[in-house]
Image (cartoon, rainbow, N blue to C red; front, side, top):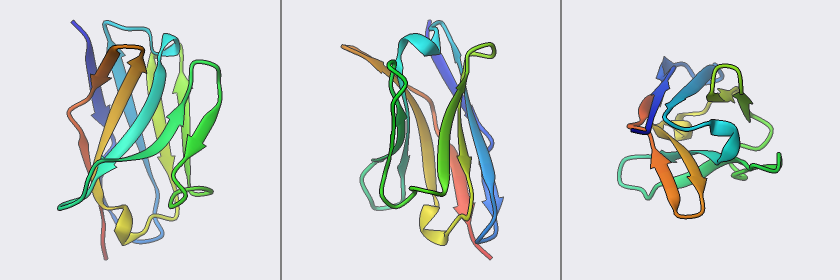
Length: 115
């Protein structure tokens, strides 16, 4: 059974930082395209950052220069380092692993940016 479990969310002040982590069981992350999505209240889920099997990365324009996606093969995790957080980054953040028709999601972790 495949499970993706996110952690690291919480409440942070504007300008602060958080590091999200997604731990996978049942799959080897390095064999999949990995991504972080987010969904704010009343909005559609949107792609935040993606890291492909081939090693390329891409980011939503709104987070470029502030967020960094990375993976730890030894721990079988994918991480999202978030800096200079803004109130508009507030959302539930979801981890995704995808390859062809295989598509797995975590349950999400809440990130709230507020003073």
